[in-house]
Length: 160
Image (cartoon, rainbow, N blue to C red; front, side, top):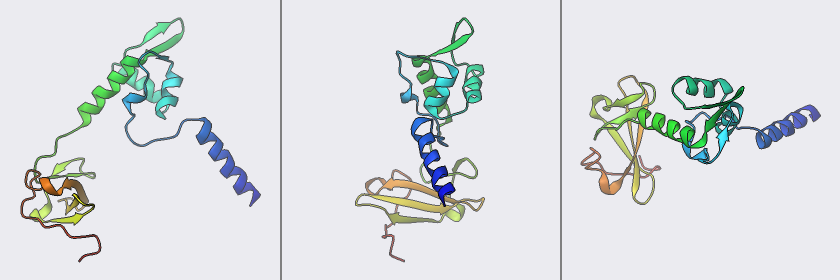
C-alpha cells in the first residue's frame, strides 16, 4: 500500500513540475511571441517529445543558430503551428458528419440520423458511418436546416 501511495505522489509531482502529455494538437497560442525557445523548452511547453520539435524544424519551422544551440523564435513557432492547424481542418458539408475512423467527413449510412437535445438551444446529431463507426455533430436547434438536417425533431436524452 505504501508503495502505491509513493508512486501516486511521484506521479503528481512529475505532472506538476513537468510537461503533461496531451493527445490533442498543440495550441499555438502557448508560444510567447517575444521569447526564444530551445528544442527542449518548446517540447516541454507543448507536451511533446524533443524529436517532434526536430521534425517540425525539418518540416519548415524557422530557427536561429546561436553557436551549438538551436533557437526557435516564439512568433515563428506560433505561426508554424497555426498554419499546420489550419491545413488539417476540413469543412464538413451540410448533412454530413465527421467520421473519426475514416478521418474524413462522410454522409450518414442510409441517410438515417438521430437528433438528441443537449441543452436549451443545442442538440447532438448522431449517425452511423458506412464503415460502422458512430459519428456525432453538435448543432444549434435554430440552424438545423442550414446544417443540412431539415425536418428533424429533437428529443431529450431520457426519451426513447
